[in-house]
Image (tube, rainbow, N blue to C red; front, side, top):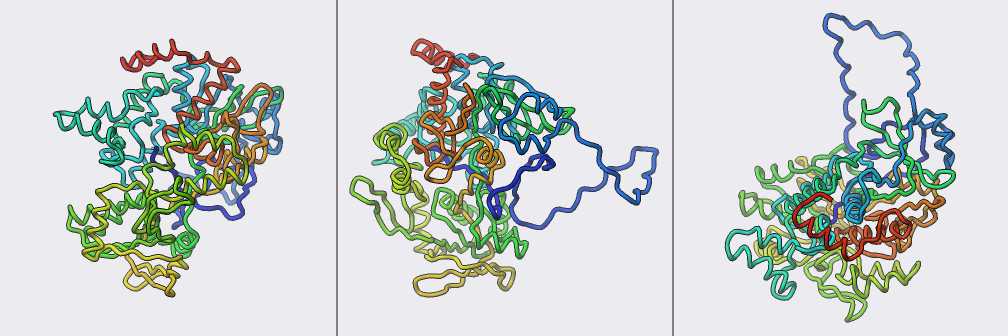
Length: 569
């Protein structure tokens, strides 16, 4: 019920990273392995002047105003005086949300509709729009704006009421009777007579842009890179941000708030160890690529020159990669030979019982959405809220796992490829990658019949392994200094209200939603509808504390009418 959209990070050996007051300007803490970038050129001398020779010994840099001190970094609970002594300016706001992605956007939408003024909320983010990262990741993983994503008609992050749904909107925006009937027919007959209806990504992003303008989202946005969240003596929290260059006289700025929400998205992705080792050893970032990094050059080269490509993975992104490769064969005459590597090959329906079975075949596990639909509002949602520890982890393992929707179009593509001989599958565990003759990459696979070597011009990794939450700097600091812990799946442990367990500070609450909390009492948190359900739970909890009025029937109806008319909140 929401396209998977994690970012991409390289695993950091050793896990924990100690915070330092002299850290760089808090950009991404990890990068994909590759050749080191050359140092930036020195700025030119002002006109009419010549550059004097460099001194024999470098002078000590001038101290930076308003930076983190060792005392701040090492202390878990801060006083107002500690920030004043460090020269870090403090701004007051009742609530801040960290991340600025779709999770932050959905919560802000709920709060604004419930009656919170813009002055009560600040969004701390290093992206300009809530959908910026999502749009980037979908594009590089071969989902352009006109294509459909893995999200159903009622998962509408721009509309808390889910009506009109995407199918209804698409029907009324269509030209001609067929365009009007088709989306409504698909919704009415899915999945028996037709594939699940899913919206076009362009329509989803346009609708979010409309809602962001309606709720005055840009007025609440504060640009910068969030460094850490620490508890405050007396209650509440300090959130430290590094503003963009030139935006502040100090290196850091702090926001003092009663409540904090973390919507930081995926903690990151990492390469499989064999792929990472190959890229690190040989510096080859063009032939061995990740589906979530720019790799358009692969498709361009395959159109120009016949070659073999290895695709690894069996989820939604792998199916999109295969769709692109086969479409290039059909439309542009590419003569690409595809070798698809499965670590686990699914031959048919599977599951622990007749009531919990998933369709499968030809290597794939088929499921319309990330999870069965009942996790968003049915028996699985209710059951998960009662489970703890190992029992909860076991249910996640049963209903989760790698899967993809069974769409007729690419099923036909793969069947044609098998028949014509240009699509082949191999099953086994990859041992290592090595350079091969003629600029190829050789993948050594341990199969049931022995070692197999697969030479190819390119290797595309679509496995999507999620990194430990410590790979995210803010979450790592939270674990070390704010009392947060891990849930049964190793992500951030949250209550049923999405308050981060163990982090309460006086009357203040620290909430989190999204992929970083997967493994909690509510599955599906990393989907559009899951983010909306989490936002509703958080909004209700904040209403119980008097932060916003409770969203009742009268206000909900009146606000829906305003939404339909696109009138500001």
